[in-house]
Image 1: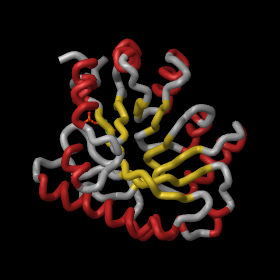
Image 2 (image 1 turned 120 degrees about the horizontal axis):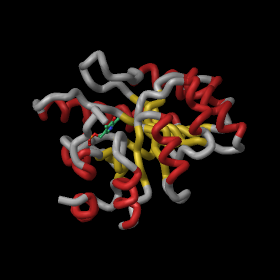
Image 3 (image 1 turned 90 degrees about the horizontal axis):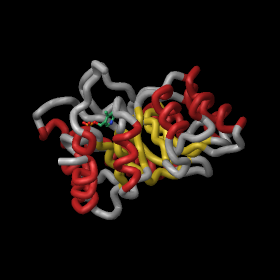
Image 4 (image 1 turned 180 degrees about the horizontal axis):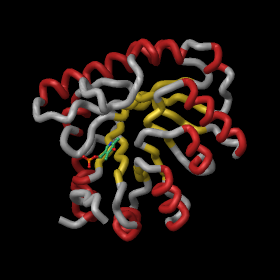
Length: 223
Ligand SMILES: *Cc1c(COP(=O)(O)O)cnc(C)c1O
């Protein structure tokens, strides 16, 4: 199936309250333009450099989501245009995003990444760390960021009961932390679910899914 067909199919399947982030990492701009040309505007990339290059080449009404792990020294390259940063996992990083956002007179929306998987390879904070950050006085001084939700990645496994357990944990963490809303923290978004598990994620309370291979096809990391 073509990119257009894949995307149209997904759009008819997804409930209206669920936002689709088309994960376009490693794919050429021509592929992204196929999605753009049938009206898609939200794209997710996991490398800042690649996202910047695509941003420069593509129409400016696109909303760019950074879904990968963010190195602090690279925040400056995307601060001018990034629409949502999914993988925020420390107060230090929030401070850097705040600093760079301020230079552009912007408020950048961020999701806190919660570690829900058992694998050590996955980034993120514990729910307790997130709660500490949300209640910290330092956070209340950051006027150029807004925490709008949480993001999580489940363990890479065929065991769907394991994945379900992790998604439910993220949802319950979200419900707990939502009580802590302040002027720069208003939790609305739960970013969870990828090509292999988005239906389960939505059943468990996700309202933002990040889907790559089911739209653009398998990724080839060799070219
Ligand atoms: C690559 C990636 C996705 C999309 O993965 P698919 O399995 O291709 O849908 C989603 N989220 C993150 C953080 C990713 O890096």
